[in-house]
Image (cartoon, rainbow, N blue to C red; front, side, top):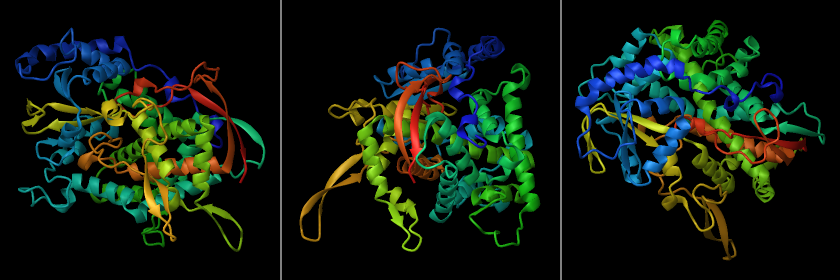
Length: 558
C-alpha cells in the first residue's frame, strides 16, 4: 500500500507456482549423482520408518521443492503412527521429530544440536545475501551466542563474537519492554492515523486481505524502519510482497542463470531499496543529537535497526551485508504476522457473537482524558485481555506451519533412535498443533477454530466475599505442543512485537469501526462458494495465509 489498501498488488497466494520441472531437471540430475555416492551412508535397520521415496533421494526432494502442500500432507500422515520418521532431501538425511518430550529435547540447549550450519550454508548466503568472505567471519566464530563464550574460545576478541552480537541486538531491542513498548506505540500510532482521513459514519466495502497487506503492513514497516524508505520508493510495500512471493525459491540455492534472473532480480531490487534507506539514514542522523539514544526516530526508525546498522559498521561488515540483515528482519516480522492478522480478523468478523464479545472486552481498556475528553486505548491492558489472547493463540495454532530446523553436531539419541552427526532435524509445528490428543475437547476438534480453547475460569472473591468466575488466559504445560515462534535459544525475538501488532490491529478495528461480513471471494475478486482455508503451498515454511479473501462493509464510528 502507498496511500490506500486498494493499491496493493495481487496477494502472494495468487502468484505463480513454485514448481518448474524444466528448471529442476539439472538440479535433480545432480541430486541423483549425490544419491549414488550416499548409498554407503544409508541408515541401518534400527532407523525410524521412512517416507515413501520410490526413487531414493529424488522423489521426496522433487516434491519438497515443487509441491510442499502434498509433501506436508504425507508428513502429517506418517507422524500419526510414529514420533520419528526420516527422508532424504537430496543427499541429506532428514529426521522428522514430533512428540512433546522429543520436541523439548531438540529445543533444549545442547552442544549436540544447533542451527549455525544451516545459517552458514543456507540462510546467510541465500536469504541475507552475504558475500562469501563475510559468511566466513561468522563461520570462524566458534564462541557461541551466549554472553559467556563456549569453553575453549574465551580468547575470541569481543569484536569477532558475531553470533553473540547478532542474538544480543535482536533480543535486547525487540524483547526488552522499554524498547518493545516504544516500537509497539509507534505501530499503534501509525495504524490509527492511517484511518484518520475516513469520514465518520460512511459505509464502504473493503477487503480484509488488502487492509492487512496495506495499512497493517505499512504501519508495521514504518514502526521498524521509519518513513524515509517510503519517501524514496512509493512502491516499497508492493516490492516487499513481490519479494515475499519468491523467497522460498531463493532458499533452494539455484544459481541466477538457471532462474532466468527473476527471483534474484526481485531480491536485488528489494535489498537495494533498503540500502538506499540506510545510506540516507547515515547521511542525516545526528549521532550527537537528542535522538542518539532514542527508541524511535524518523531516520533509522526503531532502535533495533539503528543498533544493527551500528554493529555492521563497527565490525566492518559491508553495506550489502547490513542491507541483508535489515531486509530479512523486515521480512521475518511481516511474512508471518500479516497472514495471522488476516485470520484473526476473519474469524472474529464472521462470528457476530464473537465480534461483540471481543469489542466489549476491548472497550474495557478505553480511557477518557478528563480535560479534552479524547478516548484512548490503554495498550498494556489491551495486551492482557484473556479472550483476545485466546483468539490470537488459536489463530497461531491453526495457521503457523514452519518446520523448525536443527543440525546434529554430535551423535545423539531421540526416542529410541541413534542419530548421526550431520543429520538435519525438522520439527513440524503443524503436526504438534493439530494433535487431537492434546487439543481436542468435546464438540471442538483440534483442526477447528474455537475462540475459547485457551480460556480457563477461576474462582475469585470480591470485597464482600462473594465468589465469581473470572475468565483467564491459560497456556500452561504446552511447551512441547505449542511453539509457533520456534523454540530454544533460536526462538523468534520478534514474537513479542508480532503479538502486540496483531492484538492492537484487532482491538483498534473492532472498536473504531462497525463491521459487517459481505462475502468470501477468490484472490481475483470473484465470489467464492466457500470460506477461506489454509493456503497449503506455504505449509512447512511460514504462516499459511487464507486462500480466499473476505469482503466486508465498515463505517468509522470513532
